[in-house]
Image (cartoon, rainbow, N blue to C red):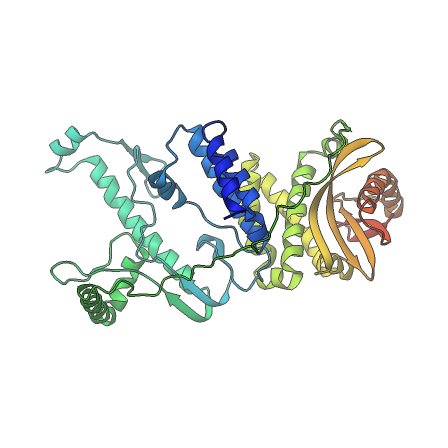
Length: 452
């Protein structure tokens, strides 16, 4: 209490004089909250909560228990950054084309979200270039047409039938992802008259005819036991999740703040990469973006895990969504994805490419750092960096291609072009390291590695 009380009393005096986020975050830091985390993901969780406080205040909503409980229902913790890749959480759509030893499907009793009210009801007529469409009706129209057919009812019936078919397809995709074990979870409660039925429009509803005869007696038996336990006023029928308390030592003190940062003039934005891509074309820029992000993903997972998860074929839909967000689709998207696939294939088929992407000591991808070089603050991003045999490697990906002759001359020109950039990377990393540093360019489309 000698350590905590002064912090809380000071926070109480500042209440109403600054934003709620600033007040709580600074108090949490002074109490030693960051010292209690076990991995970086928990710091991200705390930041997500503080962001929620910001959003509530910006929306002029009360920051009270009810509002927080309601909003926190839609908050999800970040994945453990130190965890292995053995457990993967994804949507059914994201799992298409993949397979796993064990698959767990929770919440089959929940709706798929397709049954929400719509402002406009419509569907396309099969085999015809026509659309059936009807706007939302008001309460008066709904009551007037209650006993007679109307267009919205017709469209809704068609949509329900289509959704049932889609739910069946989704359930099939999800269940067939399992190689050895499949676990299905759902919550269902008997009605007052004792009937047990699955809710329509859910994945459980599609599965129910096949499991109804077996599951109904089990559900009724479990419901009876639950009622008996409640009658006996047993407070805890099922064990709760364990609550973990992390405490600091009584003599813990807030670490001293770091020294002041010297204000330096920031360098103007480096437009070299923009000029490079503008000269090469928009397709080159988009291809470069996809290749960089996919190589980052492969290095994070490891080449073997990437290949076991379906490789590039499993990420093609993701690539199309990224291109669609840039307004690119159709033949142009196909061409960009084809070049991206070739770059990834060349890299994974190459011993040098796999060496770059395989796990290494202190390995980093898209590593952002800021350094003061020549009296100027510079923001840098290293595509790939790691340590091997006591040497720090810094590798920059270049998605340039060359279809003419004199490939060696082209590579020499590229090396001269980026020599200064790699030298800045080397100087920035050398500020905090004494080990030898080597830099190189890697061209995935050409599968060429050029040390500079």
